[in-house]
Image (tube, rainbow, N blue to C red; front, top):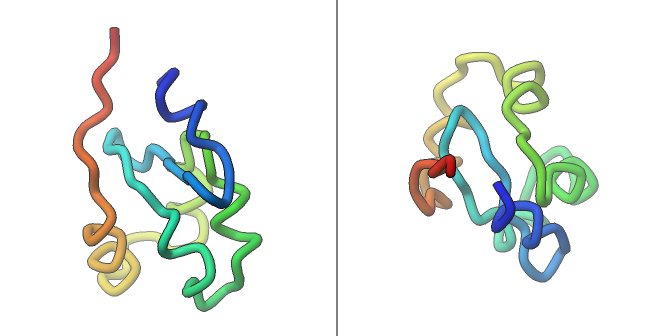
Amino acid sequence: MGNVRANNSETSCWSVIGGNVYNLTQWINSHPGGPARIRALCGTDGTSSFSAQHGSRGSPTSTLANYLLGPLIKG
């Protein structure tokens, strides 16, 4: 989680969602709900925020897949 925490800015925005790490940097300014929603997730575990907002709807989940870096490796 240390690497995720280090990528906590608009120029390098990583977040954990559902045990996977995503690089959301390129999505910040494209997010339909506005950039602040994504900036709030930078460097954090955004699972609860993502789930609360999107539930299991397919479109947000399939969009998120485009930014997958890989599973969070705990160590």
